[in-house]
Length: 213
Ligand code: AMP
Image 1: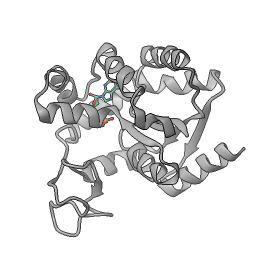
Image 2 (image 1 turned 60 degrees about the vertical axis):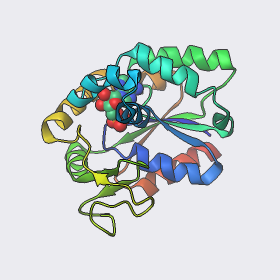
Image 3 (image 1 turned 90 degrees about the vertical axis):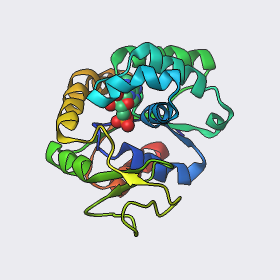
Protein backbone atom coordinates (compact mmCIF):
# COMPACT_ATOMS: atom_id res chain seq x y z
CA UNK A 1 0.00 0.00 0.00
CA UNK A 2 1.08 3.55 -0.69
CA UNK A 3 -0.39 5.98 1.80
CA UNK A 4 0.18 9.44 3.17
CA UNK A 5 -0.60 9.74 6.87
CA UNK A 6 -1.70 13.27 7.67
CA UNK A 7 -2.42 14.54 11.15
CA UNK A 8 -1.12 16.92 13.81
CA UNK A 9 1.99 16.03 15.80
CA UNK A 10 0.81 13.44 18.33
CA UNK A 11 -2.17 12.26 16.25
CA UNK A 12 -0.61 8.79 16.14
CA UNK A 13 0.78 8.72 12.59
CA UNK A 14 3.96 6.91 13.64
CA UNK A 15 2.12 4.31 15.71
CA UNK A 16 -0.38 3.64 12.92
CA UNK A 17 2.44 3.43 10.34
CA UNK A 18 4.35 0.89 12.44
CA UNK A 19 1.21 -1.30 12.74
CA UNK A 20 0.52 -1.03 8.99
CA UNK A 21 4.08 -2.11 8.05
CA UNK A 22 3.36 -5.44 9.76
CA UNK A 23 0.39 -6.04 7.45
CA UNK A 24 2.01 -6.08 4.01
CA UNK A 25 5.70 -5.26 4.05
CA UNK A 26 5.30 -1.56 3.23
CA UNK A 27 7.98 0.63 4.77
CA UNK A 28 7.38 3.58 7.09
CA UNK A 29 9.12 6.71 5.87
CA UNK A 30 9.22 9.40 8.52
CA UNK A 31 10.97 12.61 7.50
CA UNK A 32 11.18 13.49 11.22
CA UNK A 33 13.08 10.23 11.93
CA UNK A 34 15.40 10.82 8.95
CA UNK A 35 16.14 14.36 10.17
CA UNK A 36 16.65 13.28 13.80
CA UNK A 37 19.13 10.61 12.64
CA UNK A 38 20.96 13.27 10.61
CA UNK A 39 21.11 15.59 13.64
CA UNK A 40 22.40 12.74 15.84
CA UNK A 41 25.06 11.89 13.24
CA UNK A 42 26.10 15.54 12.96
CA UNK A 43 25.86 15.42 9.15
CA UNK A 44 25.47 18.52 6.95
CA UNK A 45 21.78 17.74 6.60
CA UNK A 46 21.46 17.54 10.39
CA UNK A 47 23.28 20.85 10.84
CA UNK A 48 20.94 22.55 8.37
CA UNK A 49 17.80 21.12 9.99
CA UNK A 50 18.57 21.39 13.71
CA UNK A 51 17.62 24.99 14.49
CA UNK A 52 14.21 24.75 12.79
CA UNK A 53 13.51 21.41 14.46
CA UNK A 54 14.45 22.63 17.94
CA UNK A 55 12.08 25.59 17.55
CA UNK A 56 9.24 23.41 16.23
CA UNK A 57 9.37 25.15 12.85
CA UNK A 58 9.48 23.42 9.48
CA UNK A 59 12.68 22.58 7.63
CA UNK A 60 12.82 24.06 4.12
CA UNK A 61 10.81 22.43 1.32
CA UNK A 62 13.97 22.11 -0.81
CA UNK A 63 15.80 20.15 1.86
CA UNK A 64 12.83 17.83 2.38
CA UNK A 65 12.28 17.25 -1.34
CA UNK A 66 15.98 16.46 -1.71
CA UNK A 67 15.64 13.76 0.95
CA UNK A 68 12.38 12.32 -0.38
CA UNK A 69 13.40 12.38 -4.04
CA UNK A 70 16.18 9.93 -3.10
CA UNK A 71 14.31 7.94 -0.47
CA UNK A 72 11.31 6.99 -2.62
CA UNK A 73 13.63 5.50 -5.23
CA UNK A 74 15.22 3.04 -2.80
CA UNK A 75 14.55 -0.67 -3.29
CA UNK A 76 12.56 -1.20 -0.12
CA UNK A 77 9.83 1.13 -1.45
CA UNK A 78 8.82 -1.45 -4.06
CA UNK A 79 6.38 -3.13 -1.64
CA UNK A 80 4.75 0.17 -0.74
CA UNK A 81 5.31 2.98 1.75
CA UNK A 82 3.59 4.91 4.49
CA UNK A 83 4.58 8.55 4.43
CA UNK A 84 4.60 9.80 8.01
CA UNK A 85 5.11 13.55 8.44
CA UNK A 86 5.52 14.22 4.72
CA UNK A 87 4.25 16.18 2.83
CA UNK A 88 3.79 19.03 5.31
CA UNK A 89 3.20 22.00 3.02
CA UNK A 90 1.29 22.59 -0.23
CA UNK A 91 4.57 23.04 -2.20
CA UNK A 92 5.78 19.66 -0.86
CA UNK A 93 2.48 18.05 -1.90
CA UNK A 94 2.76 19.54 -5.37
CA UNK A 95 6.40 18.44 -5.70
CA UNK A 96 5.45 14.94 -4.53
CA UNK A 97 2.73 14.77 -7.18
CA UNK A 98 5.30 15.53 -9.90
CA UNK A 99 7.82 13.07 -8.40
CA UNK A 100 5.28 10.23 -8.29
CA UNK A 101 4.06 10.96 -11.83
CA UNK A 102 7.70 10.82 -13.04
CA UNK A 103 8.12 7.47 -11.27
CA UNK A 104 4.82 6.18 -12.73
CA UNK A 105 3.35 5.65 -9.27
CA UNK A 106 0.03 6.43 -7.63
CA UNK A 107 -0.98 6.73 -4.00
CA UNK A 108 -3.83 4.56 -2.68
CA UNK A 109 -5.12 7.15 -0.23
CA UNK A 110 -4.31 10.05 2.06
CA UNK A 111 -5.43 9.30 5.60
CA UNK A 112 -6.12 12.31 7.80
CA UNK A 113 -6.04 11.27 11.45
CA UNK A 114 -8.15 13.79 13.32
CA UNK A 115 -7.64 13.87 17.10
CA UNK A 116 -8.92 16.52 19.57
CA UNK A 117 -6.31 19.09 20.65
CA UNK A 118 -6.52 18.25 24.39
CA UNK A 119 -5.80 14.57 23.65
CA UNK A 120 -2.85 15.59 21.48
CA UNK A 121 -1.35 17.90 24.10
CA UNK A 122 -1.62 15.21 26.78
CA UNK A 123 -0.08 12.60 24.49
CA UNK A 124 2.85 14.72 23.37
CA UNK A 125 3.89 15.84 26.83
CA UNK A 126 3.80 12.24 28.12
CA UNK A 127 5.38 10.65 25.02
CA UNK A 128 8.87 9.16 25.21
CA UNK A 129 10.89 7.83 22.27
CA UNK A 130 13.80 5.41 21.97
CA UNK A 131 16.63 7.45 20.51
CA UNK A 132 18.15 4.34 18.90
CA UNK A 133 15.21 2.58 17.19
CA UNK A 134 12.38 5.16 17.37
CA UNK A 135 10.01 2.93 19.39
CA UNK A 136 7.35 5.11 21.01
CA UNK A 137 6.31 4.88 24.67
CA UNK A 138 4.01 6.84 26.96
CA UNK A 139 4.85 7.45 30.62
CA UNK A 140 1.20 7.00 31.63
CA UNK A 141 -0.26 4.35 29.32
CA UNK A 142 2.70 2.44 27.88
CA UNK A 143 5.95 2.89 29.81
CA UNK A 144 9.02 0.74 29.01
CA UNK A 145 9.38 -2.24 31.39
CA UNK A 146 12.59 -0.76 32.78
CA UNK A 147 12.49 3.03 33.19
CA UNK A 148 14.43 4.86 30.48
CA UNK A 149 15.38 1.68 28.58
CA UNK A 150 13.81 0.47 25.33
CA UNK A 151 12.06 -2.94 25.58
CA UNK A 152 12.97 -3.68 21.97
CA UNK A 153 16.62 -2.67 21.59
CA UNK A 154 17.81 -1.55 25.04
CA UNK A 155 18.45 2.01 23.75
CA UNK A 156 17.77 5.14 25.85
CA UNK A 157 14.09 6.14 26.04
CA UNK A 158 13.93 9.93 26.28
CA UNK A 159 11.67 12.96 25.85
CA UNK A 160 12.34 14.54 22.46
CA UNK A 161 13.90 18.03 22.55
CA UNK A 162 10.88 19.34 20.63
CA UNK A 163 8.34 17.92 23.10
CA UNK A 164 8.45 20.66 25.72
CA UNK A 165 5.15 22.56 26.20
CA UNK A 166 6.42 25.72 24.40
CA UNK A 167 7.77 23.89 21.37
CA UNK A 168 4.68 21.68 21.18
CA UNK A 169 2.42 24.77 21.06
CA UNK A 170 4.48 26.15 18.18
CA UNK A 171 4.41 22.81 16.33
CA UNK A 172 0.61 22.73 16.61
CA UNK A 173 0.35 26.31 15.32
CA UNK A 174 2.69 25.51 12.42
CA UNK A 175 0.59 22.43 11.70
CA UNK A 176 -2.66 24.43 11.56
CA UNK A 177 -1.16 27.07 9.32
CA UNK A 178 1.05 25.05 6.95
CA UNK A 179 -0.10 21.42 7.00
CA UNK A 180 -3.85 21.37 7.77
CA UNK A 181 -4.61 22.89 4.30
CA UNK A 182 -3.32 19.63 2.77
CA UNK A 183 -6.62 17.95 3.75
CA UNK A 184 -8.43 20.28 1.30
CA UNK A 185 -5.73 19.72 -1.33
CA UNK A 186 -6.12 15.93 -1.23
CA UNK A 187 -9.90 16.10 -0.88
CA UNK A 188 -9.99 17.91 -4.23
CA UNK A 189 -7.80 15.13 -5.65
CA UNK A 190 -10.41 12.59 -4.42
CA UNK A 191 -7.88 10.81 -2.21
CA UNK A 192 -8.79 11.93 1.31
CA UNK A 193 -9.99 9.61 4.06
CA UNK A 194 -10.58 11.46 7.34
CA UNK A 195 -10.71 9.29 10.44
CA UNK A 196 -11.87 10.85 13.70
CA UNK A 197 -10.29 8.50 16.14
CA UNK A 198 -8.47 8.31 19.42
CA UNK A 199 -7.32 4.67 19.03
CA UNK A 200 -4.86 3.34 16.46
CA UNK A 201 -6.96 0.18 16.00
CA UNK A 202 -9.93 2.29 14.85
CA UNK A 203 -7.69 4.09 12.35
CA UNK A 204 -6.32 0.77 11.02
CA UNK A 205 -9.86 -0.61 10.63
CA UNK A 206 -10.95 2.48 8.65
CA UNK A 207 -7.89 2.19 6.39
CA UNK A 208 -8.53 -1.52 5.77
CA UNK A 209 -12.16 -0.78 4.86
CA UNK A 210 -11.10 2.01 2.50
CA UNK A 211 -8.48 -0.14 0.74
CA UNK A 212 -10.95 -3.03 0.38
CA UNK A 213 -13.62 -0.80 -1.20
P1 AMP B 1 8.01 14.89 13.25
O1 AMP B 1 8.76 13.81 13.95
O2 AMP B 1 7.32 14.41 12.01
O3 AMP B 1 7.07 15.64 14.17
O4 AMP B 1 9.11 15.95 12.75
C1 AMP B 1 9.96 16.62 13.66
C2 AMP B 1 10.44 17.92 13.03
O5 AMP B 1 11.18 17.66 11.84
C3 AMP B 1 9.35 18.89 12.62
O6 AMP B 1 8.90 19.68 13.70
C4 AMP B 1 10.07 19.71 11.55
O7 AMP B 1 10.98 20.64 12.13
C5 AMP B 1 10.91 18.65 10.84
N1 AMP B 1 10.17 18.00 9.72
C6 AMP B 1 9.80 16.69 9.63
N2 AMP B 1 9.16 16.45 8.48
C7 AMP B 1 9.13 17.63 7.81
C8 AMP B 1 8.61 18.04 6.54
N3 AMP B 1 7.96 17.17 5.73
N4 AMP B 1 8.75 19.33 6.19
C9 AMP B 1 9.40 20.24 6.97
N5 AMP B 1 9.92 19.91 8.18
C10 AMP B 1 9.79 18.63 8.61
